[in-house]
Length: 92
Image (cartoon, rainbow, N blue to C red; front, side, top):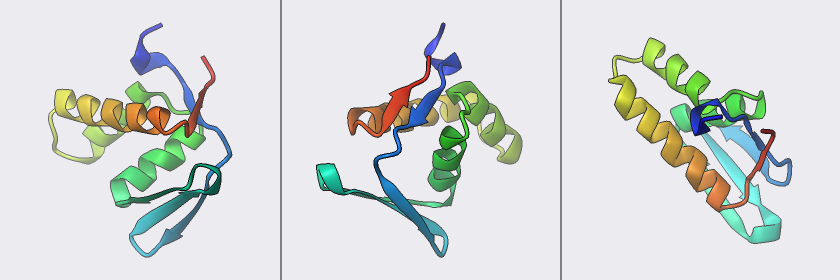
């Protein structure tokens, strides 16, 4: 299975709230605080729903006039960053 087809899932540990046009995420156990813009907040929610990186890429490409390769790269960087912060648990 390619990384784009994997279904990373938020691990349930962090707490998040939408505040205006951004989302703030707090992982108190790891003393990590993140702030996401609208697009990243949307991706966070879709990951929590079980979307794959390929799903996220397709949704962003259809919503915005951005080259698919650039979107795929940005989505992959977000997923890798969240995984590096141990905020994802793989559902295979």
